[in-house]
Each structure stands twice: as structure tokens, then as C-alpha cells.
Length: 193
Image (cartoon, rainbow, N blue to C red; front, side):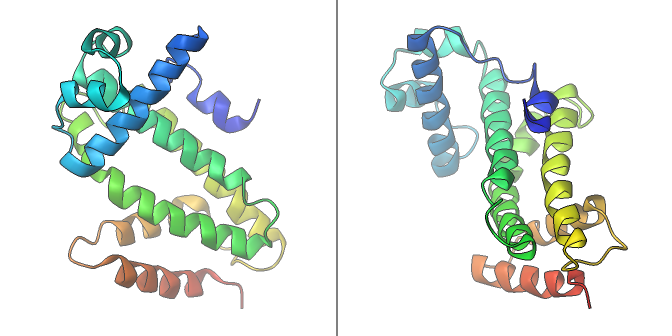
């Protein structure tokens, strides 16, 4: 079991039966798409229709909108944390840069979801703590690998890098290409000299 799975253990409440797992996955995918298109106020009926299940199935898995928001959020964090391992074949610096670019796109699209969740849970809630731990562990492993290879500065840690990248992701008036350029400039400062 990876450290990411350990960090998120208990947060993701996935069903055990095969048909229930399929419906759960379809509902998460439909909710992710609906939230991306219509915002976090997307209709639960629309989400059930997109998933090709009845509204009762949605409510069996997610008794409330906050339950669905949390499940989508955790699923996205799990995917982001797992993606770090997918970059193992790349040179250390390239893997770090690729993952940080993914992280900026992820952070920019998940801001509304996190904001909506904070309307009913505190930012120090278990779900947020577990998700922060998973993302930090994934990023720290990539940063340490780049540092060990002599490609990244050794006078920093992922807390510093994560805050820098999160700040860049939070720039609201910029287009995606500009955000990518700003990130590249910031990462140039992270490169070992």
C-alpha cells in the first residue's frame, strides 16, 4: 500500500459490490463533469441522469450534496497524488515540473469545490488534512528525487513549493497560457544552479 493510500484511507467510502462500485464511479465522473460545466450548484437530478442511474442510487451513495462534493474532491486528490507515481520513468526534474504543471491545472479547477465544502466543514477537517497530506507526500517525493539528482535547489521543501504553486494557481485574471508561463518562470528559480 502506498503512502498516499494510507493517508486517504478512511476518507474515500467506496462500495464493495461490483455493481455498486460501477455506479459509484459513474456518479463521481458525472458529478465531476457537471461541477466543471455548471459549478457546484449543479442539479443532483442532472448528475444522476448523466450517470444513467436513478436519483435513489445517487442518494444511496451520497445522502447529501456535501457527501457528493467531498467524494469528488477526495477522488480528484487521489488521482493527483497517484499521478506522481506515473511519472517515475521521467528524469527527476522533468517529473517534478510535469507534476507541478498538472497541480496548477488541478488547483485552479478545484478551488470552487473546496470553497463550497468550506461552507459546511472547517479547513482543518479530517478530509482536508488527509488530502493535504497526500498531495504533500506526492510532491515531496518528486522534489526530493529532483534534489537528489542535483536538479532542484536543496534549500527548500514541498511546503515552500506547494505554496508558491498554489499562489500561481490562484491568479484569477490570467489565462491558462499565462499561468503556465508564470509557473515556468517560478520553477526556473527552483532549479539548482
